[in-house]
Image (cartoon, one colour):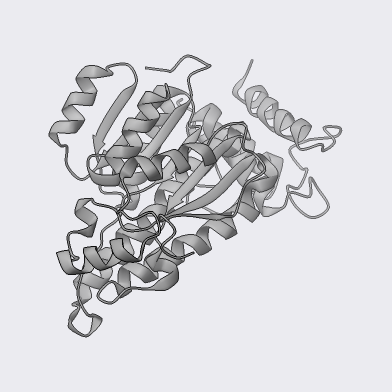
Length: 82
Length: 246
């Protein structure tokens, strides 16, 4: 399983337990508003699940908050050792 | 070391002495894995480490240091694999009239009692959110409700903790996390050393139970609120004061 697949698996696990659709989740899917419609607590929960799995997460990195699924995938691609 | 799946893990701040030590004793006796911290170890901490090598952990941490508090919680979560209970007990009670308080004294009580609680809770709530389960108890005080001459800043911080309790209960309730306060009355611990014998005698006389509290009195209430069966009690302040404020 690639890093991207692992990250998508955590996002899917989160969406499933949050009773949100896992259909059509792609890198361009927005996290808020018209996309996954995460509220602040849901964003915190996803952040915590990502940190639990990978040891860090893009929501707590101090950089700009991720806006799309692709931003989360990119965070771990950049963070991964070469 | 990661605890067995069935072993619940309690994080207790300020557990090296006084009420905190009573809380650690109670959770160890209840079969929990207990991780505690304070700014320095005590002989009691060393005794627990020998008696409960697999179930007890201690770290020298000043929880008013954001990075240190965060690192401690993350280290516990990594080693133990879970955090079921957080008891925010660490605090200081500087005694004196506010007209004579220095900036440093005000900062110290706010930094440890409020900000330290927030730092540890922030980190531990993330672990609990990932599991959608957990119980948090903030140790406040009856003086947060009634006030007490010479303890105005301490009273202010304890009232703040009760507010934090209510806000967090609403924030985290939908994720299976309960948050409550336990407000002890006057205990015979070093935290009451700022009160002279006349004051303690007066308090005892006014207390229906006819005595000062013991750490074990408070620990039983905290254990009750963090019992995994008690998921319908949240956002409350449970006063444990022998009836003093009834």
